[in-house]
Image 1 (cartoon, rainbow, N blue to C red):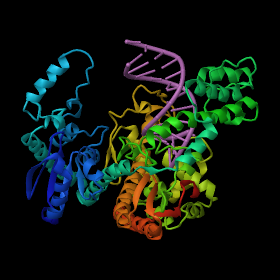
Image 2 (cartoon, chains in turn blue, orange, cyan; image 1 turned 180 degrees about the vertical axis):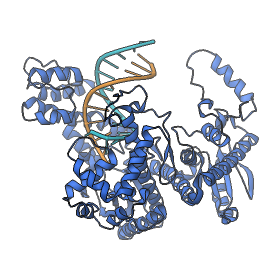
Image 3 (cartoon, rainbow, N blue to C red; image 1 turned 90 degrees about the horizontal axis):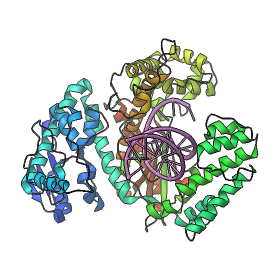
Length: 583
DNA sequence: CAAAGGACGTA
DNA sequence: CGTACGTCCTTTGA
């Protein structure tokens, strides 16, 4: 690509505890911390650079906090996840990846010592050590903290540029004819990392009174003190325990005791999970009471007054940490309940005065992504329909529910249920798509790494998922050898990872363009939920923002997929409260 | 005091 | 329950 050299310059920016440094074509200067925001604006205007950062979180929090628009960052950590995969993407891992060093040997930051003096002495010694790299060529573990003067900051910034070049070269080698696609993934994943800082900055608007009201319905009134809290709690417990006379001392929070309790009323279950107990709901009133208690207990403990007080700020915004790309399938993650708020609490998520939400979710994103990833022309044809399962059902000569179950079974590896026959038909109708799923499953069984459509590497090793580890139960020699146990778990994991992971990439590419499109309207993305976006926007801009959300999907999907044969659809609505949109 | 397991919320 | 994630509670282990 000849335009690459002629493109905007790469400028590395490092922000340390005592100062910052920017280096690249056209700039080589130290920035005092109080000037970082101003110098960032100046340099952006002068060079319109592509910013290279070790990570958005370590570099751009202040710039984002000043509400500056940040675009075109090359995030070394996110790029590392694409090129090399793995759970960790610290600067040390980035350097190891770029220099071909053993990732297991990346120096780990020393654990904090609470006792003794050796830690302090060691810190002094480390501060005097001027080497950026260890003898083996690894980046020192405390590099950012170590970079306390301009020279050290500059060395760290120059190293960042080196790593950028190495990652770019690695993408060239990996991508072949698809380099451009891999590079686009770096840009959109990097944008997602900046978006995460904006999500942390803006928070999710909450109607505090409504939230209090909903909480009180499950947890009771706000307790005055510890004793009051204990009284309310035991009252809640008593409503269940009155169904089991003589066993009022059972601890409902102890699954073992609950299991015994259930046994005493004739309900014998291997565990007390909700879906196990569901069939017994009407066999004894205790079961029904227990399941209701669990719902209330969930809200009282996890989404109760403490949660409200700790995570909803004085500006009525719910805030938590965001991650752009988790280690496994590459979805965004969020803390403090932003990703798992119980549906009954959704009425409390409410736009601020004069504002509305534009809410949009991608319809049937995973099968549509399968059509892209597999390149199955016939399956792509089905994505032209608003409801993809209708043409699939027609082709299979089955009804819609059957077609849907078959597609989901093929993608996720469901073993129970009556998908068998329809699955066979599916293999005949869409051999290309099904072939991809089968091959990926085999890759997982054999521990061969796989890549998402955007090029992110998914490896088997250092993945802390119990079912994938060698110790997991392994049936021997039977026909279902690879359906159960660790082999099958890896197969399903791989198959799921390329679908879910590729879908996550499309979602982030979409979110990145939405973020730009709504900014001039005064809008901000305030929630990303895997296939759903919540944009907070001034009321008068609602229609325009909704149109932008739809329009950007078409554009982002075409660019991401490299074709417009596969159609993606969004359900978009303008609402005040999150609960108003119910598909 | 940390780790593990059960349970359950979301997609 | 097909796969992920985060958070709470409890018990277990060193």
